[in-house]
Each structure stands twice: as C-alpha cells, then as structure tokens.
Length: 98
View 1 (cartoon, rainbow, N blue to C red):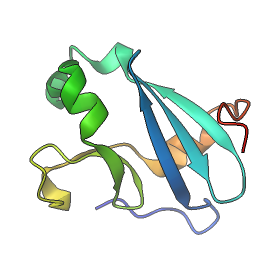
View 2 (view 1 turned 120 degrees about the vertical axis):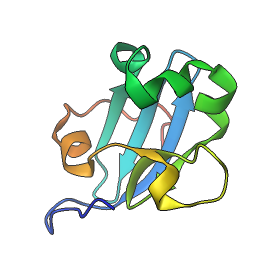
View 3 (view 1 turned 60 degrees about the vertical axis):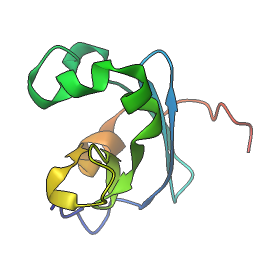
C-alpha cells in the first residue's frame, strides 16, 4: 500500500480517456493528466492495453490512481501510481470546467 506524504493533497476524482491518459483531480484544485502510453508494453501495465480494462477498472485505491484489475478492491491486486509522483506533474487546465 502506498502512503502519501502528509503535504500531498488527496485525489478526489480520476477520469480515464480513450487515448490512455487519465485526468486526476486533487483536493486543492490542482488537475494533472497522466499518460499511460509509455508504460503499456511493460510489465503489469500490459494488462491495461485492453481499452475496456483501462477505462472500466480505473479508480481511486490506496489513496491514488489505480486500476482494480480483478474487480475485488483488493489493494494487493491493483496497479497503482505513486500519488506524490502524480502531484509533481505539471498542472493542466481543468477539462471539465468545474
């Protein structure tokens, strides 16, 4: 399980896109876009090449962006990304306009 640094705001929403990117919304209003494309052919990320798995299993687990691969919400069987890394990405304009 990933432990977020105390100063990293909570992730409040993740929205996957069909181009294998994910919009990530933090509690402090920051929005970033994470591009999974460079990882799709590597290791555990190969399972995300199935667009249905990428889109439908994308969620927040372990306080970060994750894919609940087997649908059981078992945190030991998910693919998750370090929340501190995600927060370090350059912010983008909120694409939802909220």
